[in-house]
Length: 437
Image 1 (cartoon, rainbow, N blue to C red):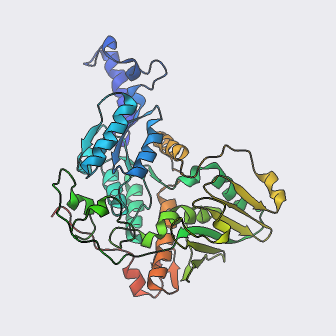
Image 2: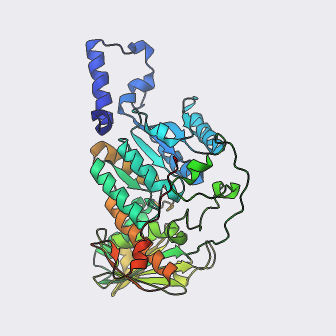
Image 3: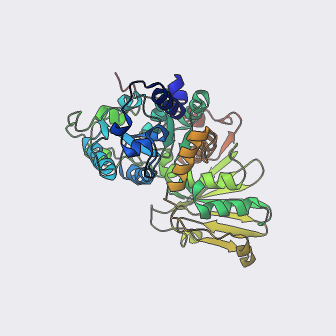
């Protein structure tokens, strides 16, 4: 790894200061913009974090808008296999900065080859999250990856291992760790004021696996949509425009855990945190018609309650809390919260334990992104660091596999393997296609 890649911000600052001091070939002061010098409240170019974007669909635009608002972050490039999305992303960035400087790439590996990019926002489909993050880390970039961060248990393991080996800063896009109402609910659960915690509830989509592969259509030119690169490590199959428009969810080749990780990556993650279990995961997973019941080694139950249909009918406790609600129950009380920003507690006396906070929608990534960029500067661990991601995501995958196999599974958190179950263990990974062939 180059010195520049390991310390991109300080290297640029040192170079600029040294060049100015020695009169080396840099633009004269009257040729440098005020914003580049950090005048008028702007952040000097040498202090900015330069950002590249890999995959720019609707969720990415939501993330990116929050990041564009940060004066010390500068988005300079976007990569996407679809021309229409690339152009829409460029329009968003260029309009924000009032210029036409955002550079576009079809192949994200060209973006990663740029030495001036410090960090990447990865918001592709599930199949690419881990491989793109791993390539980015090896290229010396810090990574903010949308969830689910790995299509399989094996991808989650490799992703965490590579981040540790390369010493890159990584933030999983499980932003509810940085949203005030979720933070307070977790703190209350861990404070002992609910008594001994015995049951955690995580809302998840009802798992589903599609078996109606869409019919093949004429493959567009690579410049319109690079279908081979869209598939990436997933098995080859004929092109269909509905896949690239977003209808890939629920298909085994493309989706993480039969859709269970769509919400589970958030809600199971919060339950792990409330149970002080960021370094482990449940040891048992048992599916039924409306839930998956898991058990930790310390006896605490984790119940994954299914929504009967996405955004449709919901179990009673979920009704009033908006999307991604969680519930933590102890022998002296309970707390529950969701994306509405409201916190419900029992007994009512526990309300006095809640601090005043500004209500923020659970979808808001501003604080989570700020945590990522601040940790880039300090080289410290993020709120949703690789080990947090590893354990919460593997727990979700294990639960999904219990549903797929329709039987109780026992899991060894230390070995990260199912106990005496070759079939389940074989599903921890999937063959990866050579998309460069």
